Length: 324
Image (cartoon, rainbow, N blue to C red):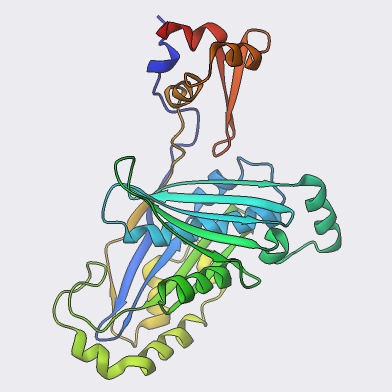
């Protein structure tokens, strides 16, 4: 017996891939510094290769995925953290999000002719040349029963790291250092991030690593300790950030072993498109019967999930009329 489309909640044919140590939180004890190291590993190839994008667009997508993976660790509830870039450049829209459980997805839409023209003149364009002028938005979605929280800033800077830094400096008034990298390797696409945050001089827990009143120590070290951490972070190369053979703990030890490094519990990341036939059926049910008839070609309605790049096909009789 075939399951009706509106009851079919099965996952589409997408990779069942988990990276166990995708995000590694850390903290410099007694210093106003915490951070996250992100390594997407094989997950970058699985997510980016599903789309027929030019390498420059895939590289920006990889950096966006690494960024939202890092930022989503701040979620203390069921929901998702998303990044949206909308500009007037050849790449008009980029979306990436990560859930509280580490499920990632990505989508980009651009003008193919404009992209070809740009890449012919600049084979390795900056992120800003791809996006043009526009805005960057970061959104926390706590589910259908809660209000979404969104911050929006004008695109500023040549790289996604600079754009995100501008966001935190202006919207959050929060000092941070963001390093992002993504590129094709002999093993496929790889992407990673290192993010440092200067935390307030208050007691409590830092990413679950330590407890206690650290406020006094943070006040004493202050700006000098933050500057030292940033200088050390700058020594990290893209090769080190993207090398699967280097465990996250080794990378962090190389950078901060003299700064009383404390490493927290790593978090898994996974391929995470959340589409299903049932969800798309719910969308189709909102259309009048006449509209559904016009959408059908040869008795089939086709809907594409832009995130996982899969076409879902519905026989016209599967939707609409079962509610009549």
